[in-house]
Structures are given as structure tokens and as C-alpha cells.
Length: 322
Ligand SMILES: Nc1ncnc2c1ncn2[C@@H]1O[C@H](COP(=O)(O)OP(=O)(O)O)[C@@H](O)[C@H]1O
Ligand SMILES: [Mg+2]
Image (cartoon, rainbow, N blue to C red; front, side, top):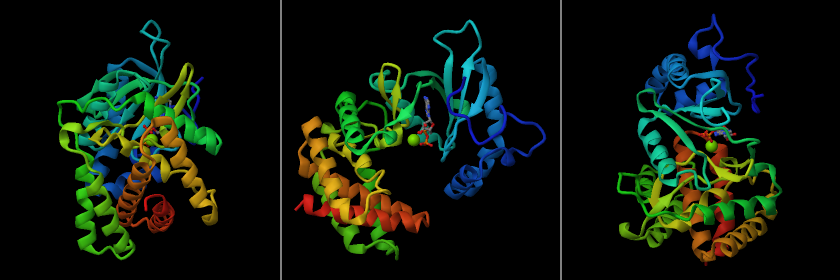
């Protein structure tokens, strides 16, 4: 049985529908919002890309996974007689340079604490990986266990040396802040942007000291496998290894009341510091800078609710830095 069925009512592909109508609305809206022309042509080609991949990799019983955001993922099986236990996930990505960085990270990690890469089809913008089973995400754990689990994953991944191949450095992400600050995006607090910019530039390490980073190590990207936790969905960037703590700090806070935010974040920072042996002020400082940068990205995409929530998180991290 495939673990995660989509809201769709049958195996893919279904006949008789236009390609766009086969995909969940939220997924289509995300992809089109991201770069409408490029996104649209990718969505139109996607059924063909999936069919080609299914033939090339001998896949059957393909079903889309639930909760698709920007990438298209299907679970399936390798045809009988192929290697491993047969359960696989195929991932299709619109942005080819993002895909290249994702693959660089997965190849470098070689399955250590991360999902195992099985095959790549650069021409189809897709790769095949082992299916994590049962794939319960760290999101399903309580607050304390989730933080400990992610902190252990950060330690386990170990910040490998940055590979020779070109990967974006997180310094290129933070360079965006200068642009966003001058664009004066109305919804983002300009003082927060300037503070984040100066904090990030003080934290940046020289290129020679940069490590390979996952870049998006939050609760939904850490899944329980049969033999332990496995990380999926890397951005694949380079930078200060402490930055790896930033993604989880600002994630899964929807259920926390504004009054409890400071305590929750203080506890997360303390646990991350204890498990990883990173400096707690540095962890909180990266958390602040990355949270404000994410707000600026959200503002650019018109996601005002995310901006508001993000700025509250950033505000709650400030006392941990001073
Ligand atoms: N190898 C896998 N095994 C099982 N489930 C997976 C696997 N890869 C992805 N998923 C599921 O699909 C979801 C989306 O995949 P992900 O690569 O994280 O893309 P996104 O960019 O949308 O976050 C994940 O949160 C997870 O629930
Ligand atoms: Mg993900």
C-alpha cells in the first residue's frame, strides 16, 4: 500500500482532463505564482514528464503525494524484479537550478541521515529516491521531542565540507535584503530588515570555512524511517553550519500563543545549543536574520499573513541575542 494518498480519487494519470485540471488547486496556484509563464509551461509538460520517467525507471502504481507545494511528487513501486524493496518517490521540480543544488546535497550526503537518491533524470527535471516508510514527520512529535529530533539530525548531518561544485552561498540569500530594504516593501518593518542585514553580515564566515548546508531543515523535512530519522528536501547551499538551526526556529509556531512565543523560542535555542554544541547566541542570531529574510520573501510574494507572523517570531528572538 502507498502510505500517503492525495485528495485525488484514483491512480495517476486520469484520462479526459486537461493537464492543469489534474493537479490540486493550491499546487497550481503556487507554481503559477512563482513565475507564471515558466510555471505554466512546466505544468502543461508535467504529465508527459511523469510518463517518461515512469517508462525510464520502470515505475508502477504511481500516486501523487498529498500537500504538494512547489514540487510534484508521486509515490510508486519499481516493477517486480528491480533492486531494493521497491517503494520509491519520484520528485519533479520546475526550477532547474534549485534542482541541481538539491541533487548536489543529496549526492554529497550519500544517504547519511538523509533519503537515498536512486536515479536522476536531469532532462526531465526529476529524481527518484527511496520512499521513507512510515514517513511520520517531526511535525507530529510534541514540541520537546521535535526540537531534540531536529537538533540531533543537524548534528548527524555534520556540516560536510562545501563541495567543489557551484552551490549558492547563504551570503547570496542575504544580499537580497539590501535590495528588499531599498525597495521599501511596505509590509516589512524596515528597522527589522536593517537589523537582520547587520546581524547576518557579522555572522557570515569566510568562503573557505563554509560547510555544506541543507538550508531548510524544518519539521516537515525530517521524516521517521524504518531505521531512524531521515532528512528530505534540501535547498543545497553553503555557509556557517550554525545557520542550519534557523529554519526550524521559525517553523510550527501557529499553535503557540504570542505570549508563549519567547519561552518556546528560548527553549528551542537552548535545546539546539545543548545537542549541537553551537553557541546559543549565534543560533538565535541566525534565527532572527533568516526569519526576517523569509518575511521579506513572503512580502514579495504577497503573503502578508506570513510576514506578520514572522515578524512576531523575529521580535521574540531579539532578547536572546542582546
Ligand atoms: N522520499 C519520501 N518518502 C516519503 N514521503 C516523502 C518523500 N519525499 C517527500 N515526501 C513527502 O512529500 C512532502 C513534500 O516533499 P518535499 O520534497 O518536502 O517537497 P516540498 O518542496 O513541497 O516541501 C514531504 O513533506 C513528505 O511528506
Ligand atoms: Mg519539504
